[in-house]
Every structure is written in C-alpha cells, then in structure tokens.
Length: 240
Image (cartoon, rainbow, N blue to C red):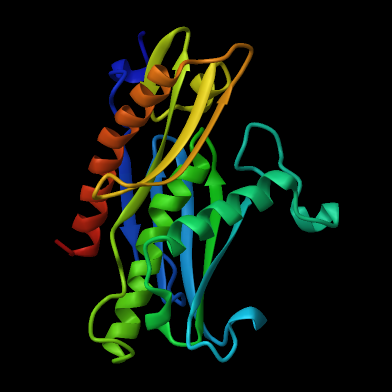
C-alpha cells in the first residue's frame, strides 16, 4: 500500500521532540509526529489524593485536551460543554495509567505529578504521541526532584512509549495518520516498555472481526516502532 511521502508500511512518521518547551513547568516537551503536535508538561505538587494520605506514596495523574483549531473543524472546549467529554476522560486516564506503570510511586513521597497533554495540531495518533511525550516531561520533572535530593536514583522501572497500528485496505500499517485511521478496518493503540512488556493495548474492529494472529502481527509491528521511539526518548533525555 502506497502511503503519503512514500512511507513504508512499517515506518514511523517523522518524529521531533524539543524538551524544555515550557519555561515554568518542572518538565516539558513539544512532540511532533508527522503533522500531530502535542505540548506535554509535568507539574510537581506537594500532597496526594485522599486515598493515599499518610501512606508515604506519591501519585501521577494526567489531563488531556485538544485546542479548538487543532483539527480541520473547530473543537469545542470542554469547559463550554460544561463537562469533560467521554473521549477526553478516557485518554487522560490512559496516559495516567501508563505512566504510573513505570514509576515507583513509593519513592516520590506524598507528592503528586500532574501531567498535561495539550494537542495543538491533530493528524492521528494523538493519544500515543501524548504518552511518548508525557513520559519525557515526567522524567524531566523526576530529574529535578533527584537534583533536589528527594531520591538518589530516578524511580523508574522502565521507559515507555506508544504508537498506533492498524489494518487499512487489508494491509497492516504502523503509525497511522488521520486519513489512514479514518479508513481503518482495525485500529489499535499499543503502549509498551523498552523491555517489550505491554502496558496497554486498545483495539477495535470496524465492520468485521480480526483474528488473534492478526492481533499478534499488529502488536509485533507496534513493538518495532516503540523501540525506535524509546531510543529517541533516551537520546533527548540523555539517559542510556
């Protein structure tokens, strides 16, 4: 299947990451994946939700949003709707779950790290780009805590990134653009660690079912893309 820019079926879109993008945040970056662009920030605050008080454990939570003109047509702000949309709520819970899965929360003390993912331009894969970028913002914040001697070693169990895969016109593709995603027979989002462990898999078939063998092919293809994304994370974070 021919893709825009003659990109191979197993190739990521061009990825660019700029750290320190927001002056005041403890950790931040701008991630660009193809034409999808997301600003990711991490804020450190004292205190934890009520269910963690007096446990000594920290917490990581996330919020996600799309700017009104991040899409072809204007997206209404959640505040104007009077409530958070189901899609937004699902994605921000996803980001928080994935990041908590690779951090030793007990090492944070009773601190919360608030993650924000703001999509300024959307062309498919916004939740996956948000996970990849928010991990970088999170690590930058953790590096600041380490510098302040909160802990001697970064409380990470692994690196984590995410990418979309799918089946479009019968072909398996890595890192779908919006045009590809909107036509996909199967759409899957995969979050995986550098050691190849799965943190989250979301898969949906449109119109017809797909086999377990196809699912395994999709996960394997996602793994090749995630390996490259994590290599880039390590490069920008200057961590081996």
